[in-house]
Length: 151
Image (cartoon, rainbow, N blue to C red; front, side, top):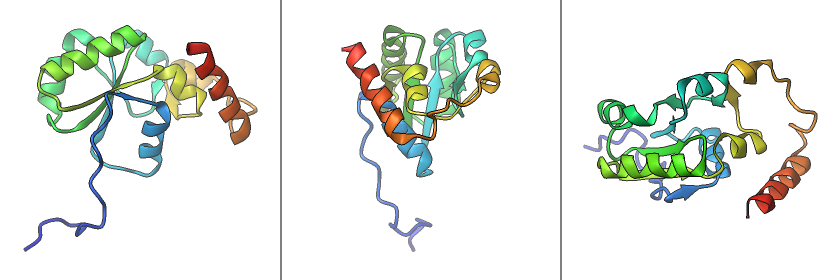
C-alpha cells in the first residue's frame, strides 16, 4: 500500500543551493511548498524590530542546540543574518552539525524587502507599504539596481 497521501502528484524538490536568491524563497512561500524553514540568526532585539514573516529567531550561539532539537537534518533550511559573513558562518555551523540542505539567503532581510517579501515586527508593522509595492515593473527595476550596487 502506498503511504504517500499525495500519490506522487507533488514532485520532489531539488536540493537547495548553497546560496539562494530571495526570489527562490519567496516563490516557495507563495506556492505553499512544504518542508522548509527560514532561520534568522541576528540578535533577538534586531529580529523583533523586523524580520521575514515566519522566520524563526535563533541566535548563532544557540543555533546547534535549537536546530538539532526542533528540525530534521534533511529539512531545507534558509538562513540569514545581519551580514553575509554572519549568514555564511551560521550556514557553516549548521552543515557541520549534520544538516544536509542549508542555503544562505543572499542579501538577507534587505533583499527580501526589495522584492516585496512579507515581513513582520515592531518597525515593519509601523511602516506603510510603499507606493510601488504593487508595481511589479518598479519592484524589478529597484531589485536590478540593488543587485548592481552589490557587485
